[in-house]
Length: 198
Image (cartoon, rainbow, N blue to C red; front, side, top):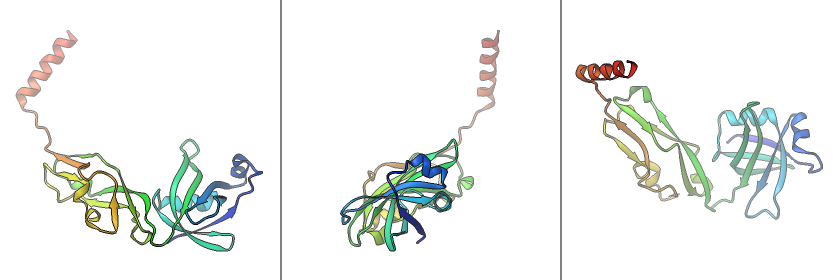
């Protein structure tokens, strides 16, 4: 689990001023915390962390001399300047289930025989810290034409330690047969185009 160093933020300083100094803002909250803690993190460290992580990732946060096991709950990204503006974390409690999400990543798409449609890119679920997942990978190379891959078909859907929130009948992906155009269809299409141009 990767470690991020954070400092308690001085709320007298505006976020824009902190960004100019090379920091991004954030917050840490949790069920067993007496109050939410506003934080600041080095923008360089945050950018490096986010290259390999996303919402739903776990991390160890070094804050005020303590190490806190946290879950990345929310991010604010500025696509214009290609930088993160804030990262929000939830402090985890061992044995307590938390809501999270995991991205669904398809592997070997170029090997699919047929037309692949990716319908669901993220899964919502609830689990204890030890059962949290970073991502879900599906190797689609061996899936036949006509496949309808549903949430309930995932291996983690059978894991009793994980409560899937996304409906089990939600479609993750579908593989359809490539449409074949006969020469007659192409001739007819060409004739319609000529008539439209006339």
